[in-house]
Image (tube, rainbow, N blue to C red; front, top):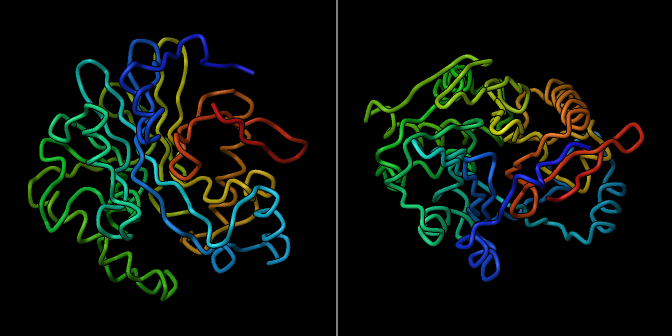
Length: 300
């Protein structure tokens, strides 16, 4: 299996931070610095949300992984420092998901990364736990950043006419999306693309639809190695690597989400790239390997 081990060095500041509070973890991708930063976590009642699996099977898998239900689910974001730009991938939940999340700005500062120093924000999609941290009370938390997101997500979530295309329980997402993106739009800082697309510093946006219409993952290649920031390909690591056909209620199109998950897991397991995952235990960095007809996560 290909590995980035020879190229990755834990920075001194990140070492101290990881040792004390596990909120920031740094590594090198070629000559670029990548830092995983925690936004906190959310309690997720998987037994109410997972589809295509029986409750007994779900509880058995959670128990085998030592996970309770509701399951504390990590919310991770990632900073890419190229020496020319500081790029933030996803922004956490902000004030939208309770006091156990919305910690990104404080944890960035603790890691020596000022929010004002972020030049570019790349959203994997516009759900609250990925875009909610753009603002607080209408004030931009990253005032100097241009925000990039796939146009299909903007067209969907910022148009309430699509409300009938999601379950009633998910319709709150339209108002949350408006709240998160409105200050960005008002400041003239929202940019859209249609994946596949080349973005700042040569980062590639790759379409990963299903979870939302405009879900993407970002491929960052430097020094001959690749990091894949994959958004919400996996919500429940204890379940979905072994059973990729298990979906979650948050998927706008669960059939397409399952197809996308299988395709991406297969590709990443074949190619051996490092993955940065928002909802796998902090720092959310690791590799995917084949395990029979399914897959397994190997933490970095």
